[in-house]
Length: 206
Image 1 (tube, rainbow, N blue to C red):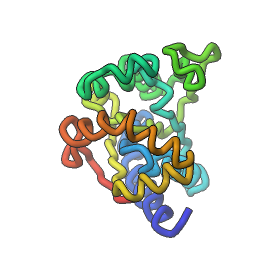
Image 2: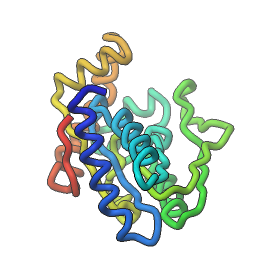
Image 3: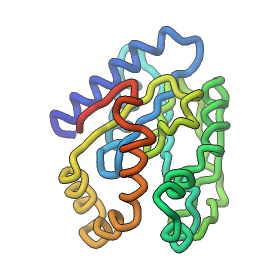
C-alpha cells in the first residue's frame, strides 16, 4: 500500500480499537463505497493490522458481493435503477450472518456464483469464524436494512477518475467500460439518495 492507504488503515484501525473495549460482544463494521474505491484493500489491511497489533484483535472480513441478489445478467439489465438498488445485495441473507457473528457464533452462507452469473449459489458454504471484529466490505454494506446489525458505518470515498483508473488496472479497459454500463446507475442512486455521506458514522477519502 502507498502512504495514503497506510494512513487510512491506521485511522480506521484506531477507531475500531477505540470502540472494541466498550462492547462485551464483537464489533460489526460496515465498509461501504463505490466500486474501485479500495474497500477490499483497506479491509484486508485493517484486519492484518489488528491481528499484528498489541493487543492482538481478531478480525473476520466478509465480502458483500458474495450476497449478490440481482439475478442473471438479463434480469439485472432489465431492472430500473430503484429495483437494482433494492435487489443488488440480498440483505435478508446478510442479516442472519451478521446477527450470529455479533453473538460470537460462527456463521456460514452460500456465496453467489459469479462465474455462472445465472442466479445460482455456490454449492460449498463459506464459513465465517466469529471474531472480535467483523468487517462487511463492499458496496451496499451499510444499507438501511442492515443498520440494526452494524456498530460502525464507514464510507470510503474516491473520485470517479480514481475509480475508473483502478478498475482499468485491475480488470482491463474492456471490463471497466462494461462495468460502468451495467452497475454505475444503481451506485449513483444508492450513494446519492439512500446512503449519502451524511448517513455514515465515518467518511474516509481514498
